[in-house]
Image 1: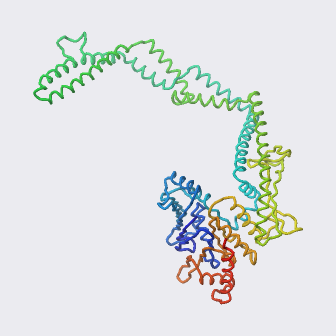
Image 2 (image 1 turned 180 degrees about the vertical axis):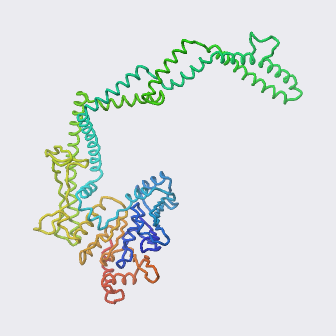
Image 3 (image 1 turned 60 degrees about the vertical axis):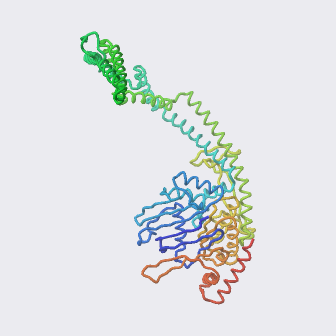
Length: 585
């Protein structure tokens, strides 16, 4: 859960800290006091888009900090991800997050004591918090969102099936597009293939080898200067090891080193230091002997062969002809040939290949249609359970006669997307299958079943959204749920029922609720009030925890706008007592 949230320099909030608890946290306050900034701060903390216009001019930056404590598998997964990114949890297992936004729009994020990309905050946020506001209600009206909601409810096995469909759909569309492109551009492909074959034939005839141009250049240089190289190597060999042409009285390096070593060894008994130098002279003699042997090998291999030199000249000319056309060096020519062979396989528009691709496209289409049919069946099964559970929740939210239907119908064929026969019906198909999903509300017996966007009022839509969230919570989801005025347009008994449902949700989740309704606020485990201070030159807001009498006065203000009214306070205390009684398990 989120244990603490600190906001500095954001909107009307100068500097405030929200101590949060597990269970239900309610945030209330006058209109314009800054409740929305709390939700905005939460959004920033978990990777939301930064709006520099909300940053206070003084101190010129907004900072949102939070302390997150997780448990179980979620903690293991999140902590492992943070450690991989270079951060680490605190010693007590909690995780520190922060987000800074300047008036210039620059944004920085920190997680686990390290600077991180803002996307990392978003990655963590997706796993630990879900924010629901009136904009989320509007999003739920979109068919794609309704389908996604049903898919989430259907569970992990359905998600695996959906992933398999998406993967098969991608392979099918790739083959279909490839086949269409080969047929449509056959002439241009054949022309390009002919040019590539000409180049490959020329390169194949020459058959260049990796690094061959550098090797030939070095060999040509040796052959062109063979006499000079021979003279230098012979003289060096004579100096090192003597030779038949050297005068007998001329000492060589090997002999001199031997004489020096023996002389020093003779005096080693008198002074051990000379013995150590004799050992080093022996090592030098060994090295000189090695050089002498290598010079002999070099002289034996050195050959001034005019015929070989002519062959090298001709070979280098053939390689230069290739490098002028295809690349800067021989290795580049070889790489060009590899790319050309790969491209030739891509350009193949032969009848055999086209027939093979056609068969593969047909096979994949059958696989996609079969998977789409299984996804449709799974969706219809999930739709029945989803509708039943949401309908039960609506009965508890003062909509006892309302019913939710989830229609899963085949997508009409003939649109811009491709079509396949799925479960015996021609349907348009995409990576998410061949279904259209629509949430429908039957408000009362005898009323028509209408799409949610047409059949639900603002208050009804709020309750449907809450009912859906309660159903989702029963099948897992993030541990922290935020509701930003989702009770707008609701009052009376329905408001009490919303408070009761949120309190029930808080038994298994941390719930944060921004509300104007005292009936909802009364169910809170912790009540936070955002208060505006207009005493100075600049308006600021802060947050404080209210309890006991203060809490009753805040509820009285929400009830009648009269925080000091004895009748209002009595009514608030009665509401708190009822909520406390019903909140007990």
